[in-house]
Image 1 (cartoon, helix red, strand yellow):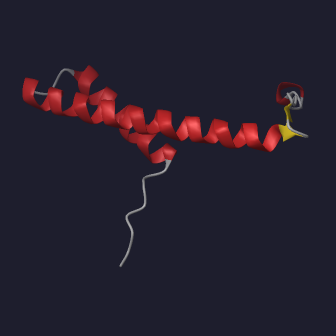
Image 2 (cartoon, helix red, strand yellow):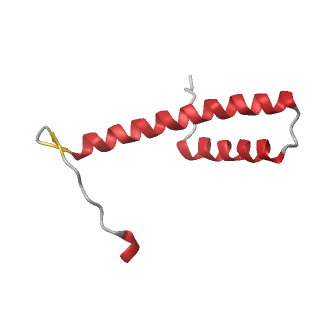
Image 3 (cartoon, one colour):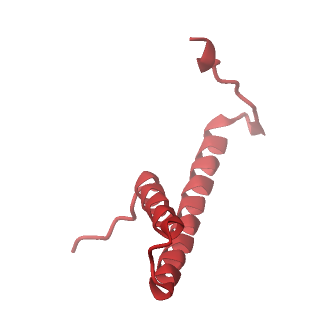
Length: 79
């Protein structure tokens, strides 16, 4: 039995951007706009959950000797 895999963050973000464009166009009926808005809220929550999970993983990876540490990344703007 195949399990349904949740869409990737990037896919959800792309779908959300598409919905925003549709809503901003003003071409949707009220019913369709409400459905699109509802879908947008769902996608926003899924993106927030993905970001929270990623942040938690980063915190775990940066945790050294039981103490959280702050790592600075190389400044990519100067490369």
